[in-house]
Image 1 (cartoon, rainbow over the protein chains, first blue to last red):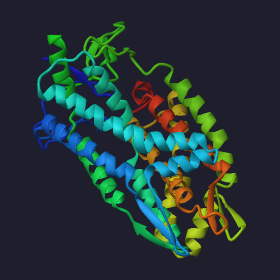
Image 2: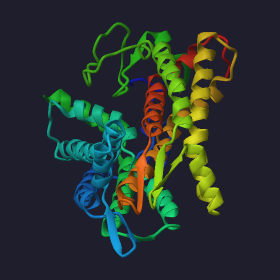
Image 3: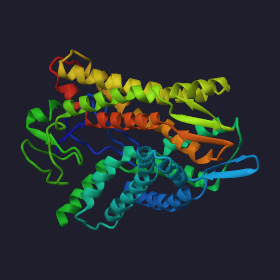
Image 4: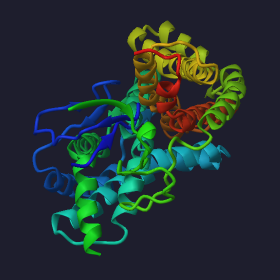
Length: 202
Length: 204
């Protein structure tokens, strides 16, 4: 039987495969070791395809718009980044671009790639690289924080103008839901076990 | 069966990425080919350096205006705290509270909490290791929510762009604040919580 260790307190553990619906916690520090999900690979694959499809309208269609003195103004994810950049705030613009556009996209693309190869049982020498990038990228994709930013901005704007929600906002909210489900269905423990098995076939 | 030993004390090193255990002094993980270290390399030094930079930037982030709102030609600069007071004045208490937590409390708690963790490890303070790990977990989790203010400004800047009538321009504090958020996130990831458990004076 192979041993495992807790990533946060280094306690040596005898791993047992947690059942679906059961959460495996470290007995010493309480770290959530594994939360298995039913058909983790298949659901990850399906959710990443859904996320990829939603990415386009969420990025290109207007999220919110305002109407002042008869003229209306729409804002997309991209226009925010662009305006910041043209005002000379390039550092903030780059950060917003990465955390609201590029990293969420990469997150979904990498989930798609990994779950695709695992589902069809195909070995690939880049599988462990993709999985590693995916784990490091996760916390830098901040769509849900952006959503909260939209809400606060709208509250601030209601005092000076009329605010209307665009079609892109619905795609954006759907994308947040899909990303959240993706995070909870992707069972890293199971994925690494399969990657290991496939890497032996290389 | 429950063991009660650290993996490292049994001569085993856990891969940071895939979790596979290898013998000490194995340079690369046999499963994912990642670099192996018993603990994150130079964890305390890196965390301390990142924290110091964040402290230095925390001041300009709160002193300088984060955005300037121009209405009919007259500009009105807002600091982070000023923006919260503006929300309270317009009767938006819950939103004001939300911004207060995300932009003032979270960065402060992160900076102080991580500093305490670094000190406790460096000076081997007798602390409750389980509690300290929970504190670390909370700090690592809440960090990204401080980006709220930056995203809000991004939206305002792109929407309120009506020339002389009304315009919002991002201020110098936005860059400083964004740096604080990014640096504290890096500080949290460079801190190795296993060091808390390596402290001989810590108790469970």
